[in-house]
Amino acid sequence: MSNFTTLISKLTSHTVWRLPLILRGASGVAIALALSVGHAGATVPPAPIGLDVDGTEFALISNTGTAWRVSSDGGETFGPVRAAVFLRKTPVPGATDALHRQASAYIWAPTCTAAQQTLTFRRTYFLPGRPKTIFASLSDTTYQSAPANYAISSAKIYINGKLAFAANGASIRTGNGSPAVLPQTKLFVFGANTIDIVVVKRALKGAYGHCANNFTPPTRLGIAFTLLGKFEADLWIAKGSTDQEVWKRLDVPGRYSQLFTVGAKPRNLGPSGIYKGTLIVNFFGDDLSVDYKVTITGTGLRNSIVTKPSVANAHMECEIFKMPAGTIATASFRVIADYDRDFDVVSAFLYANVATNTDPDLSTNTIRRFYYFCSSTSTNPKCPAG
Image 1 (tube, one colour):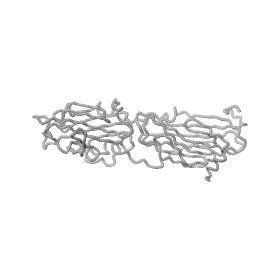
Image 2 (cartoon, helix red, strand yellow):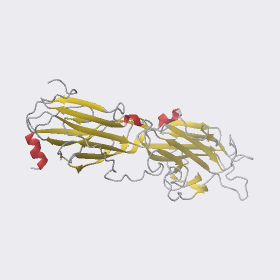
Image 3 (cartoon, rainbow, N blue to C red):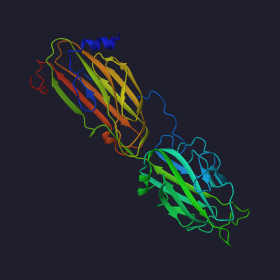
Image 4 (cartoon, rainbow, N blue to C red):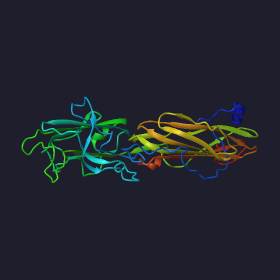
């Protein structure tokens, strides 16, 4: 039987005091206010290509390789795309942003026909939910200004099967060239998102429908596509950042031990999901015995590690990872505080913090809660009546 289990068996006569959100059961000592921040126990790998390394933004751009596929039969079968013009053959070395972590090119099907040609370009990739803002653009290698319809008569962009943008030609550009709040953000989902670009090339007739422009040397026909977005997720564990105090009178003679279940309950209020973040919980009390097993419920927390930096401090850190908007998760562990006899007022302190790079409001990210426990004979004016 472990030492912690032995201590638990000695506390069967105690009822765990249930407290909202963070702490269930408490007593403690004078507090040393040194808050350990630390780092998560396991490193989150860089976000997949298409996201920046922290998962705060995305960039879907046309390029070659296996990500983009093209169909000339209405989406029945798909095959590899061909580069008409490379804009950037390889990712920018050391890039951390979504756009420059990948190559870029004007793309087309392996062949371009003199007859009318309808092509569907498709890519499916992971996103942590709907973005807060987006920007979309499409152009072709005729390099014409809008409507750019000499070679391509129409272009449509679908997000998860729903029409998002359309043009009578090969010129699409939203807003002022930067991500903005648009109604199309609602078409994205948490998880796999499929983007289809359907373009119709005109049949060759006079100046229209050519498979190459009139440059010297000619440039083959192709389209370049960019879809950018930024995520925003309001992470919440408290109504505000004001310190909280709770006072309770005990009627316990002599030495006193108390079992705590310590933890936090982060909520993602959206509108985006969270690719990664951190939850930190610190608990301070007297002569702590710690159970290092963490109980997790809900979606979005993993790799939780409990440590004991000192005899009076228990520390837990968890990764927030792929947490959808609207979800609630909890992580908790158990601690026993052991107090000497003849105390007047003893105390416990809990500090919890959540963090992600996409959070617009930090005022609801921290809890600082002090618990004070009075002996039956304490005359401290803040102690409740016995």
